[in-house]
Length: 120
Image (cartoon, rainbow, N blue to C red):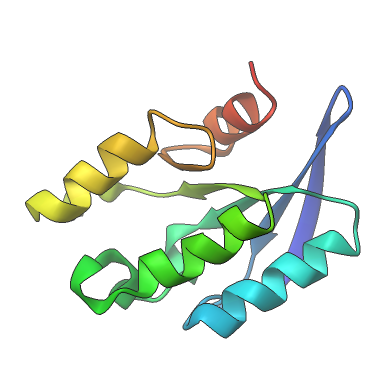
């Protein structure tokens, strides 16, 4: 896993990238939170390709379980990818509603994520 820190003013954002899956279960999500905590970061960018596809099937409950950990630890997260391939009403509604808030956002680029997470 590679961690790149983006700084905008006083905001530090960790962008996590890897050639393999970073989040396959809730414990993986918690481990990422711990890793970022030790780098003094409370905002994170994760690529969709590094998250198990089961996350995007809301029936599994995995998205809720993982994102609850991010919420509990007050870590904002932006998930970057092309979400047009997800056509179920539940996931499209979830993405739409999430993007209205600040805790979890589904965006198309790192630049959008940095802007959103830094409050621009």
